[in-house]
Length: 523
Image (cartoon, rainbow, N blue to C red; front, side):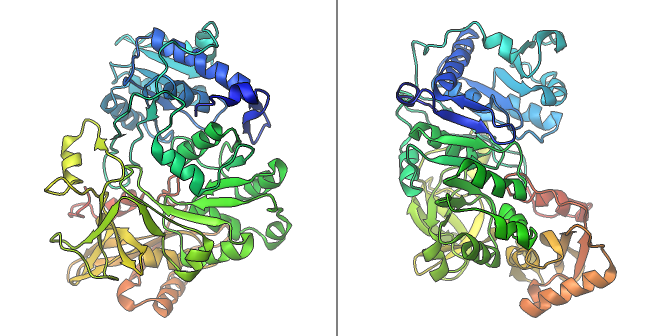
């Protein structure tokens, strides 16, 4: 998110636009804003390799809060703004952050967390005046209006500019979130990490591109995409939150050329009324990238048919272990694949650490493309590293076929029923295609004879009422299309499934309900 030369070459070009309001911030203004905050952070004693945190919904100050760290040699941690106070406090303490930036809407949650976060000396509140803020906390944390605090600082760069980078946390869908830390070279801020040059080439980024960002900015994918757009001199259009009909309208209104989505966004657009889909003008859209969660093959097929062969997919964990990618043509020839591995060296290993034959699923291990460790968590770093230290994993399961990688599931969600290993992703992918289902989760629940049995929990489309007859209909649908072992033995209904805005299903919250007084094997 370093504007660099474009603040001088194209000072009046919008660096970003807020989609809902149309508010545009030019490259000149974005540069000035980032510099003011960088000066403030230095003034508060944050030197290169120190940490600060951001806890906000998408808003018109988010990107500059990241850009200031990126030009100050700092690690900045963007935190899921849906977290509760205790969860936020854990990340603030674990990350060793010293300054927290929050929005007015998130101040109540932040105040609860800050009472347990003594290292935070300053909390900057976006959208609030100083007289609206709490008194200094007993542990010494001071509250200031963000706008007032930065107003008097210079708009010129700090003297000791250096490349900074995000230190993001895993989603925590299978346990405590972990801070993913990469070594930070002593580069100038204009010299971004090598991986980013690779991504800009892969996704055809260019200076006059217009990128639509529909996802929360705390997540790694929109973090990277928005940052690369600004480094390339393009314009980012930020959706405050995703709505399928609004997304299509913004593509037309802002003449969007590039975007990145998650599969649930595809599913929701596909279930819009046909007249809305038919009326969408997608003629400006050149590249649509998706990742973050497995995409059901039927959904992907329908999207390519609708949008044309502009859809690119990639697989890569936030840890940066490896990277696979493919375009629409490759996917149609290798249906269901997430691509060929183009960064990192992949090994598919069984439970004993032996290589799996082609087509046989195993845990994915990489000789990493980029070095990383889990910050302040040596035990988890060791757990994710092979005994000889040469390989790393995040617990994904998949297989190789003709050089292409296919994901099966997360190892933590594998169901062992009567000694048979069942990966629930295939069942979820099928259920989501049913016209009465808006979302689905499949996992193992206790069974006295088999150890585990397959359970589905579904969210129905608006206007569809749950009933035993509907549960029977959905189970029959699964049996028609899957082996009986993979089909759910029972189906429950929920008003809404706990899916993160990034597209990841927070399955642990559902599964834990069924495993009370049992051992689910989830850590």
